[in-house]
Length: 395
Ligand SMILES: [Zn+2]
Ligand SMILES: [Zn+2]
Image (cartoon, rainbow, N blue to C red; front, side, top):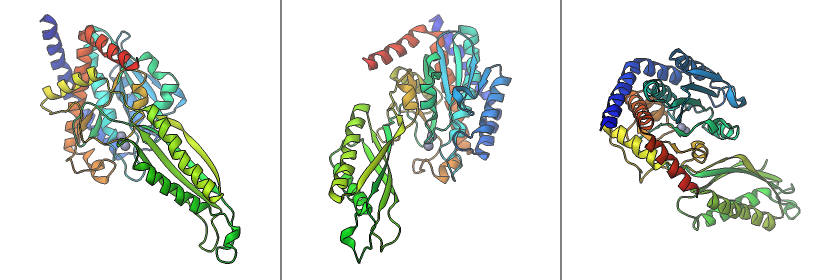
């Protein structure tokens, strides 16, 4: 009973602290929105974010993991060490059409408010600044370089068009393929040529057939990036980029081989030589920690925001948070900032990321994160439960 009272009082003070920061957070978020920077080049965003955290008493390490725009800010020394992740990269041509200006201000707002919890009950808060989520896999590089070893759990909130406490991100690996054939006059000596473009088209046909017989959550998609020089020359070279995605790593490996077989078959049929390279960065599937997800949902709901644990209609993307979730108990919930018909990665979503609804999402998400920190530091059983669930998923 006493503990309950304590945590409710603490939650009231952390949410009050977010309200007190509201103006500053919204300005910071709008400033980052107005100055979009591509992955690994988020110089202004990281300068402003680390300045904000430093002014509020956090210790800052800049350019960690040999990445100029990665950072780590920390407050407190004790356990649990709770990491809140900040993304801040924008999209080419579209600016903040994924709303990462909100993700990072949610993170710093929540972290600063969480100081009240840490001061009273111990534990520590880390803000990990993770560059280049959009295709660069910043968190994957940082995970390989050990930045999450010091964290007991990791949380971040992503804007969307719905509220959901969990995420269904797929494992993903990209593939580059090339066929090498033999040029010849396409009319005078077609029999002397080896057609690298036909090899590519046959690969697409084989993959289209394969797609009928894969699990419904898997994805295979590609584009042709090279297909010949002129219609009267038998194409001696063709090239394509593909992405293969699946709900788990085992199925991804199985699917990768099946996709590769489509290219090998087309090479055999055409006589063209195949070269291929799998992408170095492999996105892991998201492993949602349901103990954390339920806490976060409860806190969001207490703010009057309806939130599902799972959204049955959620999209199947991939995120480098998946790789973090394989290392430490993690959540990557979604907060709605736009009507359902708005598409993420569209100009309308970029607008929403600077709108009043975007600011409401920022405030609610920052509050719910800080309240979740309050739950974690006031009751050590919860942190234990989070850890236990993670270990059971590992078995
Ligand atoms: Zn995105
Ligand atoms: Zn995003």
